[in-house]
Image (cartoon, rainbow, N blue to C red; front, side, top):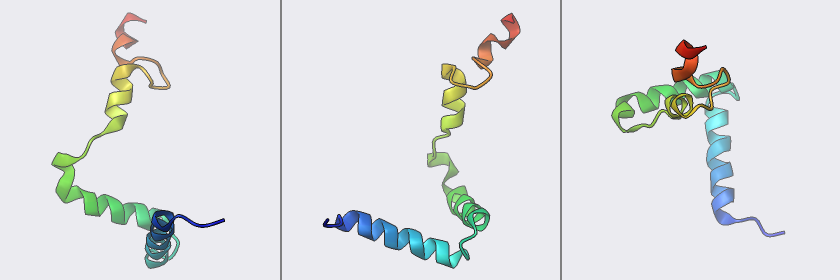
Length: 67
């Protein structure tokens, strides 16, 4: 089976990032959070969207007062 060149490039990047962080997911997460910090005004927080739409595991957050 022929490997898609785009996927191959993504895997190479992923493997490089993992190696730079010693294959430590916590360290990788902290690094990515630090990199996104300067761009916070351009990022979308989907967790807020889910709570408003009612996908929150506790139910709709705006319905709590009516329970």
